[in-house]
Structures are given as C-alpha cells and as structure tokens.
Length: 393
Image 1 (cartoon, rainbow, N blue to C red):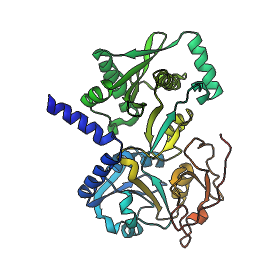
Image 2: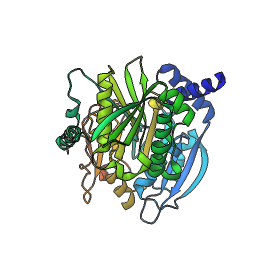
Image 3: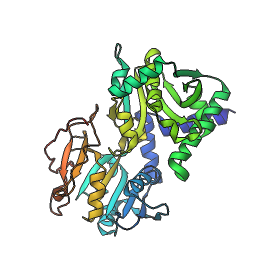
Image 4: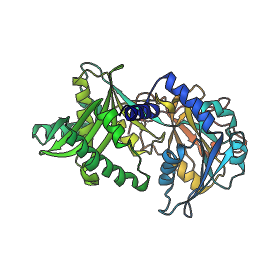
C-alpha cells in the first residue's frame, strides 16, 4: 500500500509538479533519455502540407495530433517514425521532403535548431485566472453569457453540487470523464490514471457537478494547492460524453461555477489548464472568455519550446499558417500572438487574442517571412515587425 501511494504521488508530481527542483530534475532526465531526437513524418492527403515533428518524444502525443487535425488529415494518415542526432536537426530540416517542420526541444538545445523561416513558440501555455476580492466574476464573460447564466440561475434550472462520496468519483470518472475523452480524442485519448486521479486529485481537491433541472450534466475534478491557494482544474467531462451536453451554455456555466466556488473558499487563483500555442485551438478560444492570464507552464514544460520552420513555400503551407495564428516568443521572451497574411489571404483576426499575458499582436506578411534571404522575425537577431493592435472580436 505504501509503495502504491509513493507511485501515485510521485507520478503525479513528476508530470504536474511545479518549481525549480522538479523542473531541474526533468531537464536532467530528459537530457539523459533523449540522446537522439524523434523524427516523425506525417503524410496527409493531396493539397495538404507534409509535416515533420522532431525533438522531444512527448510532442508526438501532444503537438503532432493537433497539427494533423488543423491540416485536415484523412482518418488513415500515414506516419513514418525514426530518430536523428540533435546536432543534425537543422541540417535534417533543410533536407527533408516535408513542407513544415515543428521541433520540440529544451531551451538548452536551441543551437541545434533551424533559424531561417522560423518562429519560436512555447511548447504549451497555461491559462490562469486571478481572483480579486470584490470582483464580479460574471464580468469575465460576454453579456450574452451573463444573461443566460442569470436566467438559468433565476429559473432554478442550474445548480452546483459538491460531491464527496466514492460513488460520486466513480460516476464522474467512468460516466463523464472517460467517455468525453473518447468522444473528443478517439484512440488518441490520454488522461490521468484512475488511481492517480482518485488519490491525487479527488482526495486532495474537490469534485463539482453542474445539475440542470436536477440532472448531472457536467463534472469538474479540481486539485487544491494550499501553498499558493490555487484551484487547479484537472479533469472535466459531460454525461456519457454526449456532445449535445456542451450546448445551451452548460460548459460556460460550469466554469463560472468553478470560479465562484474558488472565490467563496478563499482561493487566489484558478488554473484553467493548458493548451497548444495556437489561436485556432478551441480550448484557448473557450477559456479566453474568462479573461485568464496566458503564462508559461510552471511544470516541466516551462523550459520547453517549439520551433516552427517552413521548409517549402507552397499554397498548402500558406493556407495552414494563415488559418492557424500562433502564440510566439519574441526576442525579449514575451508571448505575442502572430497573425499571418499575404496578398490573397487576410489575417484570421476573427480568432481573437486579447487577454492578459500577451503582448501586442504581430501582423506578419508571408512574402517577407518566407523570403529565403530575409531574417527570421521574433528570434534573437531577427527583425521584429511593427506591432499591430487589433480590436477585440
């Protein structure tokens, strides 16, 4: 029993723990375990850019599936996996038949990465809401969402349940969380092991259900970090994984109830979780409505980056870049939204960026960015384009 507790606690802290000690241990282990960079070539259908994901192994499960989805890959996407020496990544990227290379790496390996036609992105970003005394949390969402939330509360249709029984955890994990993950991610679904979720989140946090007319619709399993009074939203799910449960404002209502619960119980922050550094990520756009601050993760992803490099200038690559604005790091290490455009494709400013933690947006002309002799913007030594501020959409 003691060994099992050590396994679950140690595993959770290794994956999610914050602070310099855990991050330093991760860097040491990653350096020893990743003596060669993974190299995965992903082949989509006609008219889609060929992709390579290279570098840190975890990007194969976290980054590459998102890129394939946004590219519009067919269900039978073909991958070819191998490895490369880290010190050959720049040369290998230049010689690949792929159109786009995305490399995941620790910042200590920066010198091995390509620089031409490249941007540096955080590996992931976290979205954190700071709770200030006297703040009306309903002001964090749109007028339409506020009105709907108030109407449902007034009619008594929505209510929050704080659950503590073992059966409640089993119901959430088996009937809500796992089905939701399968619905959203299919065979690529990944989550916390059941024993870890029980011991490290349920027993060290709170399980909340949103009820609609008495029926449990949405659940959220959160861990409480007492040292800095942070409520961390770890696992969510809707009843039976049914996509229809997302409609009618229920998911927004669940997040608002989580924020209000945290405020009532003396929390100073709510960590809404993380996502890939793309404005086209639905998770980012949904959580942005709660006015979080976008920050580098506090865990082992803190020192990890993505280097996005265009190998070939083509119509599919230009279309992909325009459709997927990124959150990049500039030469001063600031997080900045970057919108791509060219003479035929306007910037996707309908994907808004405004929230705390992001510096002013960059409007990047692809004819300049993809010029073979031009400097790479946002990298040290590259020319940073003038900031372009966009009105919030």
